[in-house]
Image 1 (tube, rainbow, N blue to C red):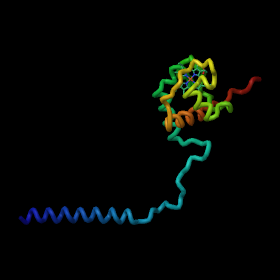
Image 2 (image 1 turned 120 degrees about the horizontal axis):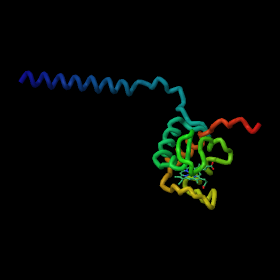
Image 3 (image 1 turned 30 degrees about the vertical axis):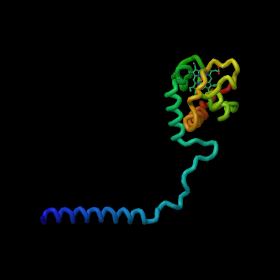
Image 4 (image 1 turned 90 degrees about the vertical axis):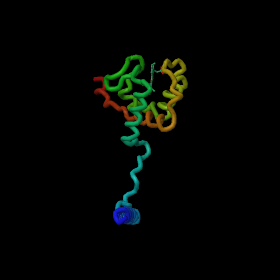
Length: 139
Ligand code: HEC
């Protein structure tokens, strides 16, 4: 069966070429190895974290009570500048989400114990990033 053999040889060759070029690619030293991996500086949050945090905010319906940039409900305080208040540390924001009564005993905000881990830190990063330049202070 010459046909079959040819096909088998062709397949084998193709496989070898693929395999060898892969090996070569793997063996080649990474060219950009000098650059250190991009690390989020302490206190700063990557765009990916903020985007993920915004998703957590949406997924949990926070906008039912809170407005950001004019969008959302009026029950809770406007969060457009929630990150601009120095009282709102990451820890405080985290508490406000997971157990609001720990921040304010008569809080009417529901506690979101289901938000945890990365979701929680991303949400906190997102909230912390919300800083609306203050309207010119009282004249
Ligand atoms: C049922 C309405 C309601 C929902 C839903 C809600 N909140 Fe609140 N939130 C409030 C109220 C009311 C306050 C005012 C302070 C208090 O009562 O705790 C508040 C306060 C806050 C504060 C502090 C704001 C400040 O300036 O002091 C943050 C931050 C916050 N909420 C985040 C969230 C996030 C994030 C979610 C979604 C996971 C959420 N809230 C969902 C009602 C709500």
